[in-house]
Image (cartoon, rainbow, N blue to C red; front, side, top):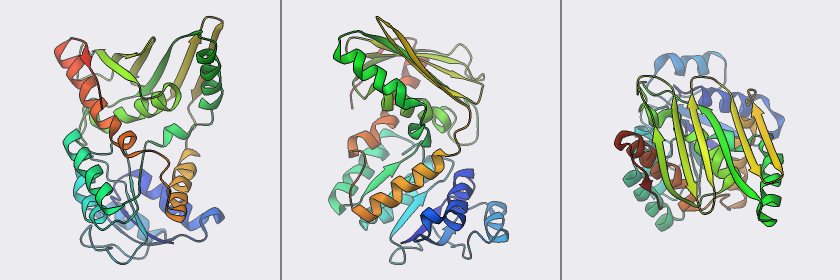
Length: 289
């Protein structure tokens, strides 16, 4: 399998390139080349012999690879880098955020449906092993009509050069939807100071709420509450998730089967926009995808 990586300035690009080079599980994957606007990031990959070719344009790999991984840090590049390959029907991985606006996400999805492009997306945090006991606990609580709600925490960077809130917001969303699902009806949010990494969000589901805490701390957690008690997950070591994320992409290319629906791929972008509207307006905002 031949692939290319677009967006070398992201540490994710380095992680994937290193796995392809060193992990026997990916012995059948060849990194044909990369594209990136950051010369230092390109040189790091070249100097460590993780790649031998750097393209001058992001669409240069059309007709040369079996799939592409888009790992640009700023979501605004994902549409630009991805659309030529999506229209060509090539399998595409798109890192978080899937797109920078819901309009871009909708257009990308519609083009993928037309071309038959297989798609998957980040964040890698959805693959945390620590979430599995919480998911099982929640399923049992639901089956017994005892589910009371939940709580999720994740880091955020409210001010940065990569789209501000959009840059990191999807990590919390992907953990939450992996555990609690997609059936969100409305969103409330409070962010007293947008220059600080501190925001509370309430995701109103059908019959229960999940509170979210965006914060200035690099760990992740999830809790499911029932009438009988709770089950919690905590993770501050998540680098193994890169392996699972890369495996998910290569499996999709090999089997021709997507792990998530097109609507689920576009879901976080619309939800990020809704959270932003909620904290900027100070009111509860209805949500639908």
